[in-house]
Length: 137
Image 1 (spheres, rainbow, N blue to C red):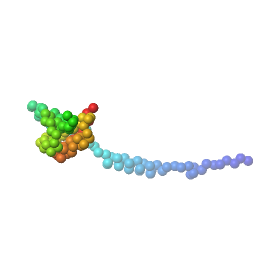
Image 2: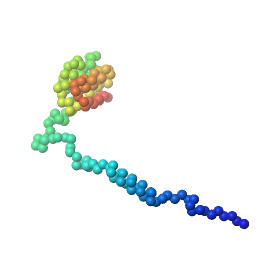
Image 3: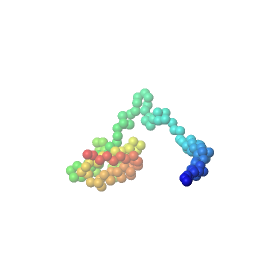
Image 4: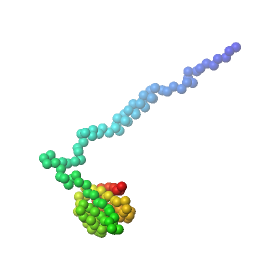
């Protein structure tokens, strides 16, 4: 005599398709509602404001570079053709610059860390928020 085991169709796991379709539609609606349809980048306005007739001014393209150097054993802060050694005079000079353009602080390799920190703090005290530190190689 041979005993066979009959497979019962109810014991097999089946997913109810109605519930799965509901979940798929809810996910589809969720992603459609939360999606942000932004403008393509080529349609956005440019950040550069150049005049059509004469173009921009030459000063708009020149970066403001504050160099921190070691000359004759003392720290010198050089901004353009001006060389300063006092922090107060540096803050006064930096406060007269265009604050929106920002300042690049270029520090020489032999300068102590304190001198670089003084230059960065002077930029902050002058109200310049866009300061970029550039170590020289």
